[in-house]
Image (cartoon, rainbow, N blue to C red; front, side):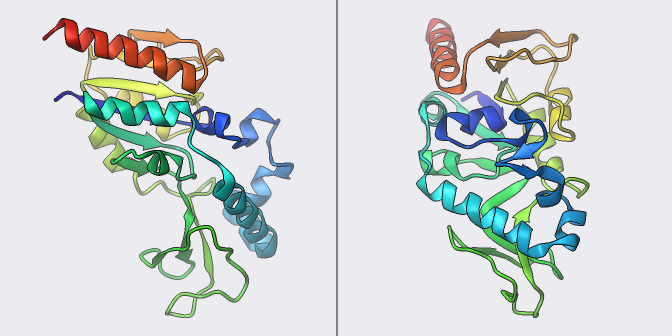
Length: 233
């Protein structure tokens, strides 16, 4: 079974009602992104940062996977699908995707501020000042903030390097190191890019563009890939 690797960004979850700062001039749900998504912001106002992610967690609880998420699950019938996501929601998992790697962390986990190895599943519950790990350190969202290293990038590069087909959905390809994954894929494999907006993709890659939102674009992708697969059998 061929390996299909999918890199997803904020456009993947937009149809589920998740807004992003890149769509609103550096704001994220009316917050200055650097106040709520940087370590400096955390040091300046922990209560603000915790409140922001508590609100996002409550929002996520009421969100639902969209047709794009469900379409990627359908592709597992035909391909070995790995999803690498820049998104911090759990909508891929809730749709039923079996292999999902979160590059930038996930909302439903908390992490110790004193020991990065202490990570806790918290579901949709809030984190407040005074919530600590077993070593007594304050808990923070298990999110990779601006300026912090991306621990999962090496695993992501390995997955991308073994792709037979590579798909990009709803990401601008300007946020590194995630954007660099397209340079990790094998030469001459099929590459599809799904986004209704213009994306400045590398000119040295032969990319088929599908200028649609995630739900419609993945439906078109399924038709293309499954038709090609059946015609080659």
